[in-house]
Structure formats: C-alpha cells, structure tokens
Image (tube, rainbow, N blue to C red; front, side, top):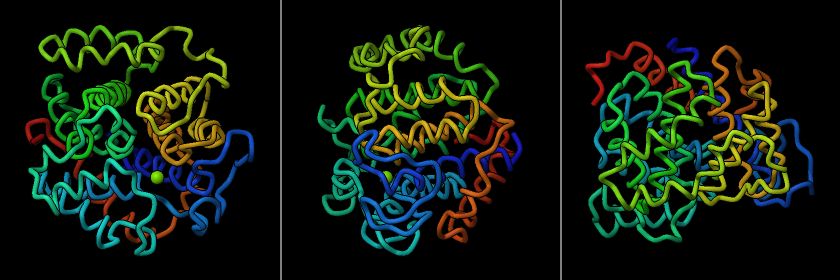
Length: 319
Ligand SMILES: [Mg+2]
C-alpha cells in the first residue's frame, strides 16, 4: 500500500473526530451538520480533534519507533497528565476507563497489559477508537492468531473485559480484510465463522460473539435509523459505524451520516471514516475538511513517518 493511502485513512479518522467534537452528546436530530464547526459541547475552535486522535497518535509514534507497551503507556500518560498529542496543549474529555487504566499504570504501577479495567461496565469504545494504526501495521501479517494476540494486548492496555477485546478483534479483522481487498459484505459474511474457529480455546471471548451478531446479518444495512444506537458502548459503536458505511457510497457521505446520529458523534464519525476509507481505497476524505484540522504540524510529524515506515514494511519485520 502507498504511503499516501495510509495517510488518507488516518486523516479520515481525524476529520471524523473533529467533525463530531462540537456535537458530542447532542440528541439525534436536534442539529444537522455537514461541515466543520466550532464551539459546541467542549467550546473548542473549528477543526479541534479529541481523545480519539490523541490516543491514536502515540500508538502510531510507538509503532514507528518499535516501542514496547510500557513506552506506549508512558505516551498515554504524557497525553493525560502533560497535554501532549493535543491540538493546543489542552486535554479534554478522556473517558473514565482510559483515565483509570493510565492511573493504574502511572500511579499504582500496574504492568501495562494488566492496566485495563476488567469490569463489564468498562465496555466503552475507548480502545476501539485508537486501533486503526495497529490494523495498518498488521495489514501484511498472515497469521490470524498472531493478529488476535496483538489486538488483545493493545486493547488490554485500557480495556480488559472480553466484550471490548472481541469488539477489537471484529474491528481489526474487518480492517485487515478490507485493506487486503475483500468487499465489506463478504467480510461480514465470513467473519463470524472465522472468529468462532479461532476462539475455540478462549471460551470467555467466544461467549461474547453473539453480542455482535446483528451486524453480520445480510439485511443489517436495512435496519431503521431509529434502531441504530450511536452510544459509546463498544457494541453499539461497532454496529453503528458498520451500518453507516453499508449505507454510503463515499467516505464523506458516510461521515456525515455518522456525525448526525447524535450522542458519541466524534468516535462514531471517526471509526466510520476509518472503515469507509479502508473499504473505498480509491476515494479520499474532503481536502477542505482536512485543511481545517488544528495543529497540522503535530499531525504531520507523526503521521508521515508512520505511513512511510508501514508502506515499505516487510512481513518479516512485524513485531
Ligand atoms: Mg473523543
């Protein structure tokens, strides 16, 4: 894959985040948005991106550097406590589960892979929202078990309940298949069987698969909008983003559909943009929106080296 295609996928996710920030937590149909705006929930200027991007950037940087899990947790800590990886040295709106995990690592000295919350109430989309760079990193990795293991580890840094882990498996395996040229509907048809077989020795995870079964049905795209839930619950988020992409013919239109669903708009729009741009590799996110993103220098300084190193990645070099 070309570096510019990788950059497009990553910028699409950030644009989705920034489009959604002003309307995060707003009620569906209490607004209509089709462009970048300012203020809103967090009173941020136009083009401000949030924790979704601020957690993805350290992951990209760490993958480029070949860093370990502790080095990545240190970067998350630098975001949460020292305002790094932000549009303007200001941290806002970090979810409870991520906050707790970073505190577990930095204050309570938990090991990185044990820092995530195992509670059933800690099944938000906070791990899902940062994992696109990992999917790009694993694009050429042919070993399914190896991909699942790394996906589990990178999820567990903040989210350790099997439902969140299985959500990450589904998301990363969809991205893997899309990046390798499979059509989205075909991926959705075949993924449940593939995961059921792969998780035979992980009964806790296997038991979570039925929570996601609606998105694999062949008529899922015809689900009524009123039955699509755009909350921050990992299951809702994954289903909703899938629905948005199945009902769109371009990356931009998928993002607009997502951002107008209300509630967790930034994460839902960001993941929708990522899925759409992996499915439509010849399309690209609006340049007008991309140009309006804040702190372009920081974005470029992390995205460019990551895209370059992944574009020329040799299979044998995957850690
Ligand atoms: Mg956010």
